Image (tube, rainbow, N blue to C red; front, side, top):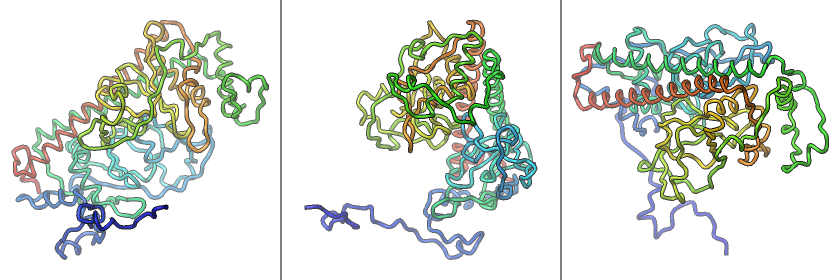
Length: 492
């Protein structure tokens, strides 16, 4: 006999079954009358509200963020889309946090109201204010010349000496918690500039401010240089292929293929696999006299892991999914209990490996690649990522990473192998067959040097950023515990 789903716990379990207990607290009615008159329970039940009360109840008056910085947001965007050749690239809020921001929309600059304020200066602190609110990052060279969504709050310090501390404070556990507790909305959460303006923030001594200023500047410089090196490496690769000679006209018209091409080992009938863009790239390799080798011939191994039931918990190990791996140093990384997986060490990676996202949309993360560094070695990686180990005797990892990840010359050859409609996938067998173009050894080494240096710089920036974030969190804990030795308690 079928058993109906129950809307409440069975009677014999009600004493121990706690999922239906309401989360509640009592607050003074006077609290509801101040500020925005927030009547949502979440605002007072989330931990960030308690953190905010703890800051506000200190024996010294604290300035709010409005005293230290201006938080602002451009008007809602109504853009007119154009083709890539005629439009200005545009990034949505979440795309700003991608390791490689890739614009998918191009807007008419003349028809975009307030376009000048949608370009953001290098080093500006931005915060997500819609959806997953409270994510903080710095604008760097990858965002130069790009229109950026209104769904990011811009933070401009009134005194540049406080810029580093403001960034660290907002990324700290206490700052992030307070921002999250200030959100509003049911399905899609939002933050307003006024919510950030009202946050209490202790101000450290001048020497501590200088410490944060120097370290955050180092983070920004490293990311800027890493991006410039990556662009330089890809430009050398493009020049060696003579990318300018590749025709893009065929991409917008219909095409035909021989029936014999449909009945290979994999029997690929999808039009996307026979994309004229990919075909034209392969023909360009031939025209300039360059040979290609299947990925399997220049690697030790190309594989993925088996699925397993993931159970997350604070006692677990850092868990890296595709979303985490291809974002700028995410701060909300989950921890997974590794005991559930058979041979858990096999899910870890080594420095120098290349990891490829193998599911998701072909215009998004699917097919994206990342070059592993030492900080990645202590994490547990999702099964839904293809692992690639370059054969050092045949090819350098930095060059292979450039070939697979180049947006115009590499990615089309990767992503055409994706299959499936709702959520396309890449199979390791298809990935192993991707053609890898070979250049002169000296050119490959030059590209590899630049790209490996870029990846190392980006990794060092992440490590320093984590240190700065922890340092700010520790300072906040000290302040809340009554230790104000490192703070400017006279600030009004």
